[in-house]
Image 1 (cartoon, rainbow, N blue to C red):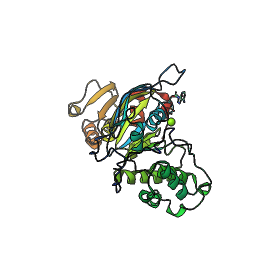
Image 2 (image 1 turned 30 degrees about the horizontal axis):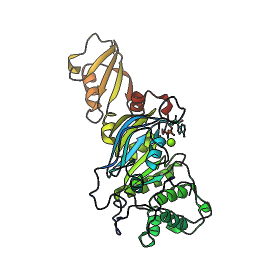
Image 3 (image 1 turned 120 degrees about the vertical axis):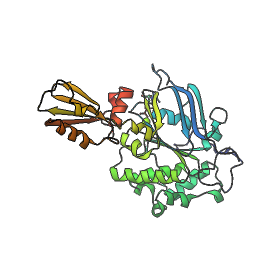
Image 4 (image 1 turned 90 degrees about the vertical axis):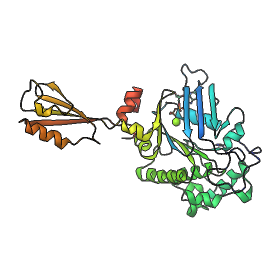
Length: 346
Ligand code: ADP
Ligand code: MG
């Protein structure tokens, strides 16, 4: 099992794991109330040996319990580094990290028992069936036979009918889902997916999204990384944007999108204007050139028809119209100044 952390919690998983844990609750500290913060990072840093610049630089980030959190950033931003620190595959060089309220330095195995990781690379042994693979993986995590939920998990990821087929016969999308299943065998309250849909076709992406949504709805906190703006926008309730090792914004998706409610309309007129006609003074208009007006507005609150009527009422003739709108891409570029993200996901 090459994907297991080097210090996999084989023999030392928390002893007081409740026998009949509710989904999304098992694996945490014994009988404690669930923490408000599924993951908490403070001043997290990583400089790889020999590297001039840190891959992660003073990252503060909180993933609230129950959220579906997107970590968005261009290639090389540091997303996998962050995930791999949580997985115990990369050693941080600065700061603190807690998973489900458990410090990864103080209690690494317990912390790791609270998290399931779906790695970026697809690594699946082709000679086992999904059922065998999950059972074996549960064994690695020390989940007793009677507590294993192999069939339930296979059903949850839509692989029941492939339970006893060799993994090599699974399609790419099924393999992805099998990796998700594998990350779920020890019922972690937190599931982390590193670029789950990179290089995956549109239909499959939708399928994976719906599985992820269902897991989240059932109570699992989800952290996923992506370089697709569209994915973060559609799927996640929170988005953090990371660039060159730094978190540049971390907000509820709706707050981030509210910044998008900002459009510019440029109206070119047949007439030349020295000043704004009286009837147009109620609008936030600027004279950009003698025959050109610039109107900034919020599409959710403004009726363009009113402006057009006012222009007509002032005896003006519209020759041309041009609109510009901010999208997540603009915000991303504005915040990161990174051309590397250009075109991602669009
Ligand atoms: P992302 O997952 O966002 O694409 P990564 O975390 O993989 O970004 O990489 C962040 C930075 O760290 C990149 O500059 C990358 O080259 C570097 N990096 C990643 N893994 C290693 C490693 N094992 N050794 C040295 N540098 C690495
Ligand atoms: Mg990566």
